[in-house]
Amino acid sequence: MDLSLKIREQDGVTIVAVAGEIDVYTAPKLRDQITDLVGSGQYRLIIDMEAVEFLDSTGLGVLVGGLKKVRAHDGSLELVCTQERLLKIFRITGLAKVFAIHGSADEAVAS
Image 1 (cartoon, one colour):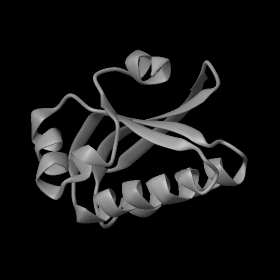
Image 2 (cartoon, one colour):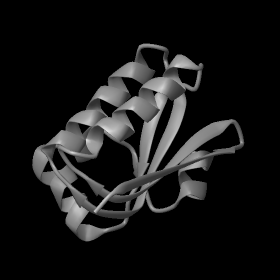
Image 3 (cartoon, helix red, strand yellow):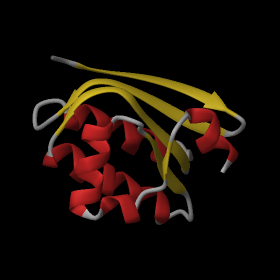
Image 4 (cartoon, helix red, strand yellow):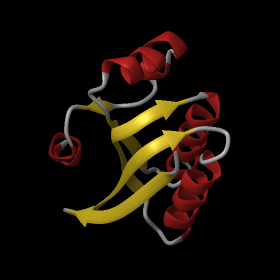
């Protein structure tokens, strides 16, 4: 399974819609996209994970790295995720306390 990324703007926030699997093979694509966005001055990011089918530790590392990049510019990286199997990973790792996790992109933009 591959990873697809779709970027859009909504109310001054950059939303990255991710679909597919975020694993050791595909995570660099997401990492590079986040790096490019931060490099171009986008410091308020929302990662929409509604179409993510699989997430491993490499993917978690990319998300944490992205969070550190935007926080260096007083920005934010928030997640959209309602899938219980992914939410469980965030809870088990303690990252549910690190990331703001929303039920929809609109909810995330409004926060």
